[in-house]
Every structure is written in structure tokens, then in C-alpha cells.
Amino acid sequence: MNRMMLLAMTFTLAGAGAAWADDPAAPDKSGFTLFNPTPDADLRSLCTDRPTKSTSPCTVDAGRWQLESDIYNFTQQSADGVTIDTQLFTNPTLKLGLTNDLDFEVNIAPYEEVSTHVAGAATTAHAFGVGDLYLRAKYSLAGDDGGDAGFALVPYIKVPTAPTGLGNGEIEGGIIAPLQFNLPLNWQLVIDPEVDALANNVGSGRHLNTSSLLSFSYPLTKAVTVSAEIWGDISFDPTGTVDQGSFDLGAAWIPPKAPTFQLDGGVNLGLDRATPGVQAYVGVSHRF
Image (cartoon, rainbow, N blue to C red):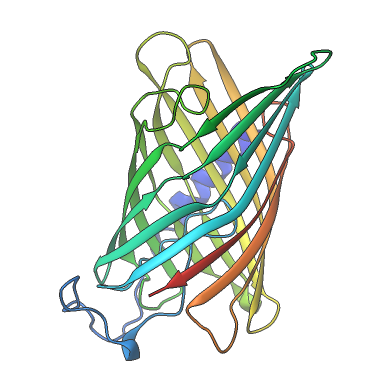
């Protein structure tokens, strides 16, 4: 099922290219940089990569900071009598706008805890500590300042800072190419094809990992937006290909009197045995 979904997303992506366009009436903000920040009057509406798994093509305005973080994140996966619970106690991503269409992003969970329990066992194994460090850059190619479509490239690298039991101790990386479309009746669609080079589970070397999603969002009110998405992932590890899939729901609230602040939450439901059965979280975002 996941392979068919990824193929369908690829064809959708290929057919969407003609729609990429900026709003010709948008102001020229190319002169704003890290050292010449975007003034308040020219700031875009708050745009985040939360609450679902989707990555939006929008960037942070030049010279501005943006914080996006889980407040608490709980994941549970059960298979063959083994239950693994993962908890994140905050998971901040800090973004800095370098130019009008380029930002730099740093993500790390300061404290992560993994508990593993085997059915029939008297004790539960625990691993805890800091998570891995992720460094990303997001470059908007279209749609940052208006238009019916947006497109960006988001290369990333993972630096192994997590201890044994939380991380694999390997440098990994990849690239995401988020697409966003304004649809009729105020709906919005995000498509996120991604290609990664991941460390093999056994021995040295790297293998291909691909993932994508279809994420639909709708503004229930001027302050509340809800989202629903289907996510799929295929890992071509030499020890065996692993397919994952989930159905994800999210909601975000931006107070009318605080347009640079967002509170959100969501739940991700696994669609197969290889995917965690449930992941639930609450989070917050703020632009400075």
C-alpha cells in the first residue's frame, strides 16, 4: 500500500510543476537579510512545520527567529510481545531567516526517554538522554510571498549526539521537496516527497529511504486550522525492506490578539505493524 501511495504522490508532484508561481503583486523584499531584518509591516503570516509530519515550503522572514517545539510527545509501538514507549520532554526547532527566501534550522530534543518491555519479563529497560542533532536549510523557490502554489528544497543532516539506546551513532542526511497548493473552498494541500541516505542496520554503508505524504488543512475559524494526512515511508535496508504508513490528525490555534504565537496538538495512528500504533503530542510555536 505504501509503495502505491508513494508512486501516486510522485505522479501528482510531476503534474503540478506548471502551477508554481509567485504573486506578481507581492512586494519586493529581496533586500532584506539577516543584517537588514524584515520590518514588522512586511512580515508574512505565521507559518510553521507543525503540527503534523508535513514540512511547509514557507521560510522565516529575513533577520527573524522562530521557535517550534513539542511540549510533550508520546509514542508507543507494540509488536511480537515487545512494547516500546518513547517520550520527548520538549523537542525544539530554532529557525533563523538569512534572506527573504532562505532560513537555517536547528533541532534537538534535550531529553528523550525510551522504555522497552518484553511480555512476561519482570523488568523494563530504560534509555534516556539528549537526542540527535538535526541541521536543516530551507530554500523557497516559489510562493513565499503569495500565489496559489509554493515549492522549496530542504536539505538536512543528522549529527549523532544521542547515546546508545536512543540513536544509532551514525551521520545521516537527505532532502525534502515540499509543495503546497491553495485549493477551492479554502482547503490547502501539502505534498512532501523525501529521499534519505540512512545507515544500514547491520554493518557499514548506507541505504535508500523514501517517504512522502498528502496533507490537507482547512481553517475552521480565523484562529483554528485542522489537518489530516496520509504518510508513507519505505526503507530499503539490505536486511529487508520496511514499509511504514500512518494516518495523522492535527489542530492549530493562533490567537487573534497574538498572531506570532501558535498552540497545537495532534495524534498519528499507525496503519501497519512496522509503524508505531499511536503518537500523541502538544506543541507551541512563536516568531520573534
